[in-house]
Length: 113
Image 1 (cartoon, helix red, strand yellow):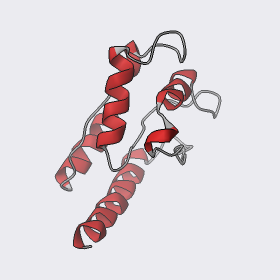
Image 2 (cartoon, helix red, strand yellow; image 1 turned 90 degrees about the horizontal axis):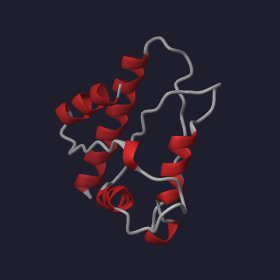
Image 3 (tube, helix red, strand yellow; image 1 turned 45 degrees about the horizontal axis):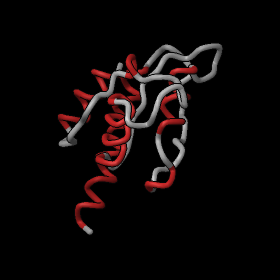
Image 4 (spheres, helix red, strand yellow; image 1 turned 30 degrees about the horizontal axis):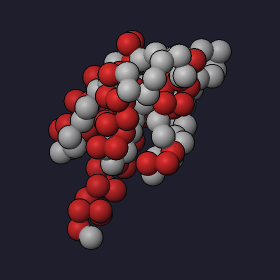
């Protein structure tokens, strides 16, 4: 799903980066200078917005996802994400396309300012 969202956003003119959190350590288990932590933080600072693709686990967020959020510093101007879980397993492609169009429209408005 992440690659499909990337494809759609790229076609809409967005510059998209993907972060694989597999090497991200658990919060506070290592120093913040860890390479994966620095990559996550630099991408967060670089971006105008985030789209997070993750599996649902018992209709909730996974621990890996929560761990990523914990590593992002609020002191840099970041905000906690607003979650919109798609819920059902059907029509996800259409839902991703709809969200991508909203982001592209917002980007166009900001570019005109």
